[in-house]
Structure formats: structure tokens, C-alpha cells
Length: 87
Length: 195
Image (cartoon, rainbow over all chains, first blue to last red; front, side, top):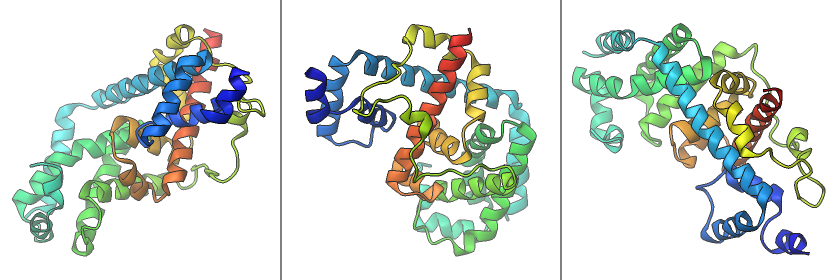
């Protein structure tokens, strides 16, 4: 009964999963509906936590990739481009 | 110099004249940003360096025609991603935005509730902290999904700017991000099961 009501008046879990991935682009009402759903739906809470964990891992990975390339080489590239294109 | 000043008409004029100080300011500010963006897509430092150099070549060749309708950073990322696309033209995967994604749909029943409930985050965290697993899953994403995800989550670009860079509508961007995150999540769940 509660699930049916949630689907009609708040969100379905599928809607929640879409909104969670696109946070920052919603209006106040959508954010409030999302908040309500988060309070009462356990699997949606798990889903949101997973998405947050994943986002921070990707940021860490990309930071590590950049570290593979020596800073001095990047400075060299910067100088080369400036000297080539600047007068 | 703030991000906004790079798009001032005075600064653009100085760039069109290839004034050394203006060129230095711009390249010093954005070379690292572009390199990081290239590394996120290509993984290889040498290939990334080449693509960044090509991006600057194209930028300075096109600066005469730049009308400052978009931010200079948007313009640079647009060129960068075109260069990456050119490089990958033969291996690029088609991203179908119109049709539903069966992988995502399988997660939900017809009434919109979970058919397959997400894994307990405590189990999931093991796979998400294994950077090799994250890397493999990230590589499996279609190019545009990866770019949208990177620009939003790592670079923190506004949705408006991302739409301009990737040449997609706001709705399509939502779908790209949604699919990227779900494919990554499902891939990492599968890795967590095998841990």
C-alpha cells in the first residue's frame, strides 16, 4: 500500500535512480520528493550510497592517472606550446 | 586571473594577436586541465600529451573566428573531445540515446520498483575501492557516457557547459549520466560478487 502510494505521489524507485544520478539539476519539489523517498526506501538508500562511493573512487582513479605523468614533462609541454603560439 | 576574465573581449583580442602574456596565462591555466581530461579518456600519457598539443594547435588556428558565445574553457574542451573522437573514430561505439537500455530496465519491475535490489553498500565498497576494477569498468563505458560523467563529476562543469561541449540536449545529458553511472555500478557489483 505504502509502495503504491509512493509510486503515485512521490517517485518510483526507477525515477529515484535517475534523479540520484542527476542531482544538482532538480527543482525544490523534486529534491523534497527524493528526500522523502530516501527516508522510506531501503534499497534506494543503498543505491544512493553506492553511487556516492563510486563517484569518489573515480575521482581518486583519475587523480592517480595524472600522477603517472611526471609534472616536469607537463611543464615542458606547457612551455613548448607557449613558445610556439605566443609572440 | 579568474575563469570569467578569460572570456572577456579584451583578453580574446589579446589572444587573437598571439600576445605572449595572454597566451602564457591561458596555456598555464588550462594545459593541466586539458591533460587531465585527455588522461581520463585515453589513459595513456603519451597519447594524451599528443591530443593536448593538437588541441592547442586547433585552438590557435581557430581563435580568429572565436566569437566568445561560449566560455573559452567550453571551446577548449569541445576541441579536445573532437580530437579524441578523431583518434578513436574506428573504435568508437555508437551511443543510442533514444532506445531504452535493457541493462538498466532489468533492474526494475514494471511498476518501477526494484526487481534486483542494489547490493549492500558495505559489500560494494570493496569493489569500488579496487582502482583496477574501477578502471576496467570505466573503460567499458561508451565514449560519450565517459565524457559526460567526467565533466560532471570530476571537472564539476555546469550542465549547460557540458551540453555545449558534447553537443547534446539537457535531457540527453541526463540519460548519458544515468547510463554511465548505472553501467559502472552494475559492473562494480559484478566485481564485488567475485571478490
